Image (cartoon, rainbow, N blue to C red):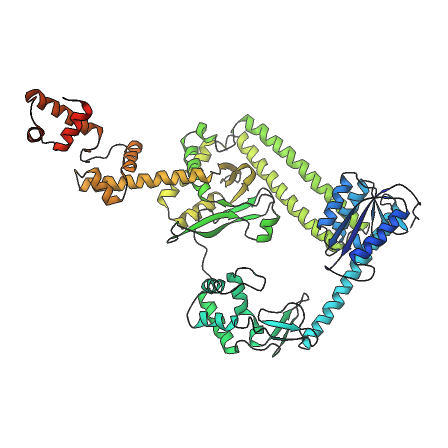
Length: 621
């Protein structure tokens, strides 16, 4: 191996990288300030230009750290020539895959790793080997430290001694490795026990009660999960119980001062079982469809939440498509969160439109059923075969990394499993397209086949219950892809010929959904009014207003949208009635030009005040 002394006074652009594993760690040589001082002096003694200083207070086993990511940005922008660290383990205690990535970024940008007295050029085989060894030893050393530390913690626990963060309501006494009751918060446990067992309040209600009295130890609002944790924690009836990463669970009695009895704990456990018995998921038309996120290729599930009315006197279920796992949702760039109301109406429209004729079907399906379709399938097959070759090439590369000793067998298996899964998906897609090609070629895959297959779903929204809709849609569309960036849900229909037909569902905006719902509600109200008029013929608009608690302008708007109400009494305030009255008064004045208002009232039957008003406004005299 080659360990080359640095050439003094060489003008290099240096980035200093410093790291400690725990905040405020103050070991002699490894505190942040000590690293900064020593590395700054060394860089200046070499005549290097210090471009910037990057720091992290986190584990060396993590690749994603703010300081390291900023440093790599500088590397890729070509701003530095060397990364200066007190020792390489400050830069990396990474596993083989992450170290391989970091090393490649540095090597491809001609950036060296420097420790005081040594420079390692990763483009040099010997230097790279030496650097790999340092990383392996650092990674192994960390695992040894953790193993020893956990061995000590397990023995510590067996002896009934506590360590680390303690349950709410207790204070850790470091000198004796014991705990005492926190008088300021010990009231919480008997209080929540009483709410559950004596008053029958659910965990949700208990959280609401606590929020009126205090915050959690971290100063946040109480949640259901935090309440449940306190109900299930055995520490409150004296038991120290910890489960370690090796699978061992250690239980020691009478370690904590008791805030509840064992009998109370058992009663709570029984009550929670009764309150939280598993219930089947509520039926939903997309529940049986396996939906994949186009952004991260992970599953998207139907998730139920609740919404409240403006007055908060009613609760409505809200179904959304999103990643079920919170960490998965956070890792995905698209972060799908789609109200399923934005999908169902378009899916219904799509199925019905496809059944009308081939021309309207083109809006939703991308299939020509002719030579154009054959050409398209050929292109898709060509692209999939390229992807297959690429995966096979990656298989060869990871095997070489393993044989060269750069990857462990564990890392190899993990990478190979991912590539095997990808390869299987590609091969299934190729087989699907080959079948489709033969069917199109022999005219066995055509518009009539699609119509026959989808006709069963023509009226699924109006004729079937939600559970039946769920089964039907799941059988027709076993899989789907949610593409949030393009506002699309692509439903993959599996035809009896064992080929897949993609149906594109444009996801509506919530504004369009609300407008449609408002229009539907108006139609429902209009129909209710018309039913009332059928039973109460001749009812006036004023009577309708009072009975349905609607204003005049709304009723007029309903008639503009859906047509005039039948059997409605003439509107005494409406334009037609006004013209009729004017005509009657004119006729009466022609026969009796000098008649008084009282006389005209007797002649016409029109209210005297209305007669005076119309004569004045229309200048009838």
